[in-house]
Length: 66
Length: 252
Image 1: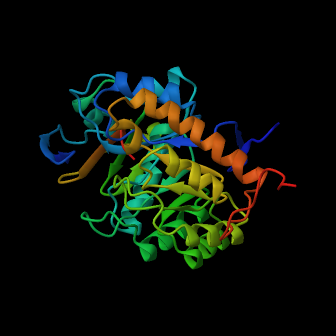
Image 2 (image 1 turned 180 degrees about the vertical axis):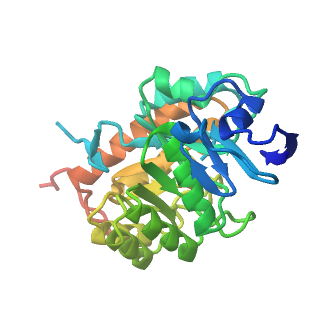
């Protein structure tokens, strides 16, 4: 299935979880937060939250600013 | 004398809150933050860049500086609320510098979206520190809405124009029962001192330090200026007079 991760298209196996999407970008999970279709998915739910076709996944972290 | 800043129920001995934007490198930023003596520093939330080396979070952690996520880059209340919730998840803090801008040219805060977001974030349990224009009426409304402080600008972000309307800052200070933090517009040390002389409880700045020729030196200057301005405010300045007032006994 195709999902968008941080604005780029990615192909993931059917039923892939939020955790697998994060893994596409980084192995480090501290300091990272995820939203799927503009809803926050808490870290504890990454493994148990499946993605569906065309989901928009945003993986954010803190950077210099402000 | 004990003169802690009490903000969101926590104590800070430094009244200088730093931003992290604009520094040429993490090393330069780190030196500046240490020189500033800050205990609270803002960061922005952005898409994770797998190629990024080092993290601003490591710098803050090393020096035991509390992280204050902001909602920089948001144009609507909805975006700001989502960004604050992501920051809470990523950084394990319910503090947020609420910043909702109206346009990219001035970066001036949008009062309507800011107020809307503030109400939603307070209801969601956040310690909300809103960045606003120098508007006493809006400051009062945000305090009533449950914000932990109000943060009026001195001038537009990064402009270094200082405090364009000292009178309004004084009006905000007079009416406020929460800390008033002068946020944005500081250009040099005298601007930070003036903010404190006007009665602000703290100053938040970034660009004036991070883009100075010597960020570490300017950070040290800002640290001293905030202390000096605070002392001068407590001491009570003499009235301005039209004519001279002799400081030596007149003869005979």
